[in-house]
Length: 578
Ligand code: NOJ
Image (cartoon, rainbow, N blue to C red):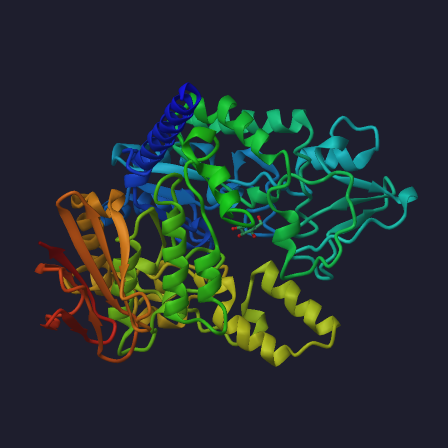
């Protein structure tokens, strides 16, 4: 009897503990944080605004446009790399982490830009590229000069006398071979990206300390966070085992989240993040949901939010459907409803224009679909990231010939296909639609020379659409994409339910309409988005009572008959629910 009672008490106690833990976890995604409430604007400095007429965007150009950024209502600006770089990969190959790229200006220009952002209540997130450096970084120059260099161990080497190193796939190399032979010290060095981007050796504590010092240098200057480039790949198994079956489509499974990456992230957190009020996000969220949680769950003290690729991968696959996109977002939201935090994005500098992937760039539907995409990104749970130009509905560049592309990935893949006797016509067709250069063309300020970006020929040619799609055309039109975007940002700010409320998808299998509720306490919204060229219907649950239309991207109100809502093509509506 006593034994039974003890057993029962133990079980009740354990259930209580589990419940308490679940309650605790439940609170994490509701905990108020500035970086959860922020709207992030990703700005590609090379193509934003050229202030000195050399055809390349620069920091002074950004400073000139700070009032524009402020007018959008965004809180955080994430800048792609602006450090000294020979630009093999547009700044993702850094030769001096404490200096500014010459084409972009000086440290004084940086300080003025940062001050200007802070004065306007905006924060700055820097791109931190520490999976690799440039081969022109002093560390690498020293490392390659002698096997005895004190910097040798900052990188990964395979000495010639050990024979050919086990194959590693390189994303940008013309041969996709990540080992490059270096004659001086008769060794191969590792580069997951281009030959001019040698991978840093994170198992070396000296290297890790250098990185933390660099982060502190910028944090002391006042920057507000870091986006950590390709960070999931930074740790390698330095015994370099053979990776059976490694190839272009599965390399993430071999390269990502190698132990002890979490120890290093916790070390970084202790050394840097815990000491400043910084936002942290790493590019890539690992191989699976567990990896993503391990990066960002609150108690682990690693990073703030995950940046996962599943949704953009769906959108750039030839068999894209909105249904797949919906299922992907819904799956991720469910996984993160209690703990951890997500980034919500569909565009960035590594993707073609979002409207060409999930909207409709035709003249008829361009504006409506651009507004629908803004509605979507700004009503999901997670921190929204908007890529510059998407707020005015910029479309793909319209390049036709390989000579128009500037991106190392596109160019080297073309050369690789050429060397393999690949189908170049198919390659071009794919890249005209999906090359990342599509979103790297100059920001379209007006319909004048070079779209108002520069007084001389830009480093990459202006997109075909600049006469019709440009900011100047839109500024004075209350119905324009940019003004709708401003309205949506404000709506998110005024409705914290869009940040913290639960997300529940409605009519999950509807192939045209993506509908969901966002609910926290009495605050209830229904978002209804018609991702198609035809009038479409969605039936909402009987118990759901819509009241006012809060947002509508078209002048016509949708009809509602017996809880069935009919939306025009690319219509986006937000209802308040009773
Ligand atoms: C990811 C960046 O977003 C991309 O632009 C870059 O080429 C690679 N990492 C290498 O740094």
